[in-house]
Image (cartoon, rainbow over all chains, first blue to last red; front, top):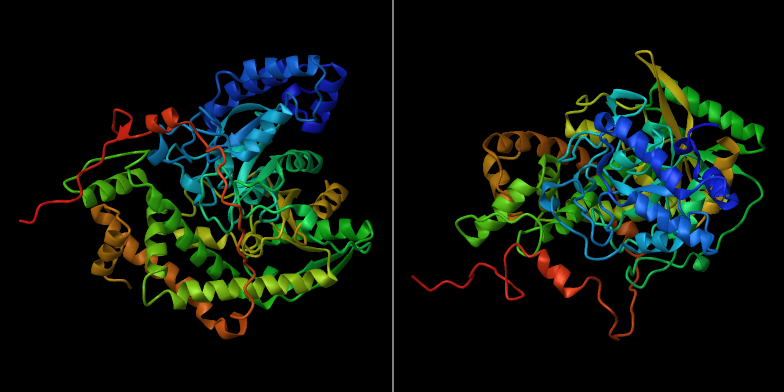
Length: 469
Length: 95
């Protein structure tokens, strides 16, 4: 039998239900793997000292007759999701000693289900980046090649799952932050429909894009976590009851591919794996058609303008007055500027500056106004596209994981998000599923297939995902 | 390229103290990024104005439990006195 930490959630859940294993044994197996690999991978920023006690409680709950598929399952939680009484730093110096005073809604739901929290995982500071190189606490390394990044911003969560340090994890996705590291680490990552999962207790990056999503070893596991954490929440007015969304269920599995977008920048071996996945879907009875989405030309620009604008607004709350880092200067202005200058890392500072620029009088219409219009246009094009296709398929990332430090130019790093940002602009659900590997310097590096579905149609993503993986 | 003064003005608006060498690198990076995202200028705004997809979500104005206990919130204050947050005096006498 393989080690317990290598089990999928679904497999472990069955064994827990039959009494073949206990949650304590599962947690011990994960902790042993963390002990072995975390010092080199840097996936966990903190491993909770009471993980085993949580597991004991889960075992007691099971003995008392409770049963939930996640009861006793050890999970890793991204460092921007609040767990009452524990640190949540968003991988920033600004919140180095911040202790959460309440549970995020997703955490409340996972506690009710009986999940065990192993620790908090590394990320790009305040979820700004795409490689976990912007963490104030060091880079997370890719388990498949430690010279390379794990992706980001939920790099710690993806690396933890891929290396068997956790059975599953929560990440958050603003422009691909769950799907990108899932692709780079060879695991499954879901960005739910905007509003499907409550954002209460998620440290905000871009409020109109952010969604919490699962990172898991299998599609089935992602479905399990998603079904546990979803649902309308009075604490997040943007959350929606999925039952309100009318789906047009189609029996034809039509897959649209925006060929024009694949023309530029995708590495040939990634494209080859992508074509191979399409062939597999065709063999399962799917039909693949070419679709045109003209507004995609502006997607990346619109995404980044809105990102900068909302980031500069959301991060303005960190001023050293009520909580977090607080440094004194010569004046009140100086208190703010010193605290923020020291507390934020380079990428956060850059985006705050860019957001301040695009929102300033005189530039607002040219940038933010136009970006909002492009977003509406793209959303309409997606709605139209989903009248004739059930999925839109692309590679998740144009290339496999890059080497640590390779993308030092910020704009070059932004361009890697070309396929992932659209689902955040339009609010559609999207999933990254492993589609094979490409070889780089003798190492096999995973690459992911991204499927996007109509609003509220996560079920279609899970169904298609299970055909492939 | 954005001038040094423009960068310093943005930093003041954003309440950010920048390192010396950072001003120069931001001049370059911000200009490059703005040039790229400036592509959106080609989007036809008029065409889209009439179709917002956002709507307001209202709720009844009734009391509900708040998140977080008072004692725990107080613990996060940078400086606390008798359960109050101590902040810098912001109203100064005219000179």
